[in-house]
Amino acid sequence: MIEADKRSPIEHVIVLMLENRSYDHMLGYLPNGHGLTGNEFNLVDPSNPTSERITVSNTAGYITAVDPLHDFSSVEKQLFGQIGQVVNSAPMNGFVASYIEKAKGDVEIGRKIMECFDPGKIPALTTLAREFCVCDRWFSAVPGPTWLNRFYAHSATCDGMIVDTVKHKYRMKTIYDSLNENGLSWNIYYGDIPQSIILEHHWKTLDHFKRFDKFYTDLEKGNLAAYTFIEPRYVSFHEWKANDQHPPHDVKLGEYLIAEVYDTLRNSQFWEKSLLVVLYDEHGGFFDRVPPPGSVPSPDGKKSKNPPFDFTRLGVRIPAILVSPFVEKGQVDSTIYEHSSLPATVKTFFNLPKSLTARDKAANTFEKNLSRSIPRNDTPLTLPVPGEPNEASRHRALLRADSLEKWRQGEVEQTEISQEPLSFFQEALIELANLLNKKARRTANIDEIKTEHEAALHIQDSLTHFLDR
Image 1 (tube, one colour):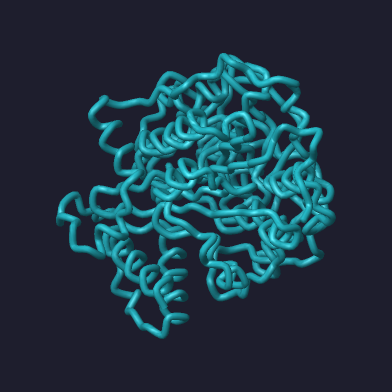
Image 2 (cartoon, rainbow, N blue to C red; image 1 turned 90 degrees about the vertical axis):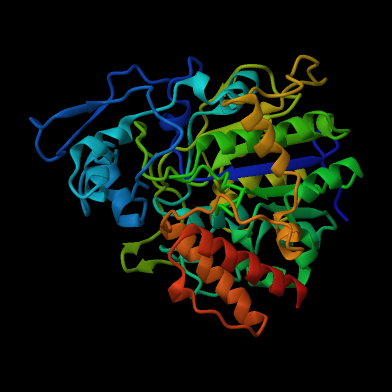
């Protein structure tokens, strides 16, 4: 068994990864960091220098009606203005044009992609950024959608895939394998279904996958693992609303999740032994002004054929905050990081002998930000949250309640049913749930699932039988 580095006070690393927001969209108006001036813009037509300029603003609302495009080709258009015109330094000028395309030509909707959050509107996230260390050069690992980028957090590769699909066998070595091999503990907590369960070789260790309400129980019992990864709720299920912040979900609910994780850890016995990392998987199509840096190593030499891509370019910048009493207040780290920096830094903290791929071997690590020799005593006991007190209390209380168990026991009232259409990400989660069904020797007609509520029922039912098989 390998022990944690005795030179470091950190014995526990906790990662909360949310969904689909760029750095500028969430944190661009912070006074610390290299913030927005308010003069940044995109043209309605990036190929026409005389077309209308749409400037940034701090007027973003909690709910984004139209989910921006963020597949590989759309991200290429957002970075370079058009597809197939890759240059060394991306002009970052195609966000408005891409959003107009998603909005079926509606320019009024298209201009909203330049709306960013006022810091006061998302106080949980921005308080962490002010109180601890914000990384203002953390980029998504791939210029593409959710699954690919989450795989890099777990495996420092997406195994050559460029789309979210269950049709591929994901058997890459993960940071969890490395921890197992060296006698170190890990857990993945999830809101409704863990996307990471697609990593099939971890089905032999399903006891490591726990519903989010068990996070509180484990901390109270002193059972916090060496490495913890937290996945939010991706689909609204009755009164348990999605809190992943993926459009069109309410950003306030993600704020409540951030606050719950921080407050629980801050007031636990583990606070002075822990590092919490709060970050996002990818930018979700939202505007950011900083071009991704130059080439990075291919993790494993694998390439995508359609569309062609060799995995040597990073994606768009995302918010990332390092939270620990050993981090000085108000730090800004402008080192280039990407999601492979997570397993790379875990390797450093716990003296793991091997990297997972060439990508995490080359990735910068962020342990330098835990620079204090003694923990701070001025860190907030709790985080502020937006919304009315009753609303916040209700949703935060639901985080401690197991919706799956209540549903199984017939205790869920048929209220607040979401009829939202499905996002591409949710459609992929339906396919994941169906894969779990097949492994449990069950069948379901997923072609009939059209709404978020129908997806939630399918996911809850599928996961129940898979875990109980």
